[in-house]
Length: 160
Image (cartoon, rainbow, N blue to C red; front, top):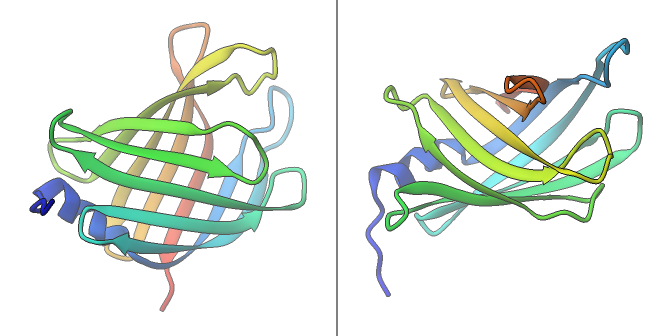
C-alpha cells in the first residue's frame, strides 16, 4: 500500500526534532501550581505519522516517560493518535482537527477523571504552533459546569 501524504501529514512534520519543555500543572483547588521540565524527541514514521517520546519530571516528584503518536486519517477527516505514560495504565486515544489558520491542533479524548472518583471525563489537548522553534501544549478537562478548564500548560522549545 502506497499512501500519498496529504497537507495534514505534512503539518505534523514540523513537530519533528529535539525539544525541551517547561510545564506548569494545577494541583487542585487551593493548591499552588507545580512546575516541571523535561525533553522530547519527535521522529517521523515515514511521512504519515510522528512519534514523540518525552522524558521529564512529574508533578509531585519522580520521573516519567511519555509516548504520543499522531497521524491523519483521510477517511475520518480527523487527526488521530494515542498517548501513554509510565505513570498510568490508561491508553488515551485522540481524534482532532486543525483550526482554519492551521496553527492550532485540538485533540479530543476521554479518560479517567483526574479527581480519581472512578468516572470517565472528556479532555482536550491543544497544540499551538507559535513559531518553528516554539509550540505550546495545553490540556483541558470538561468540568461539571460544561466549561473547559485548563490544568496543564507546557512550552516546548526546539534545541539549538
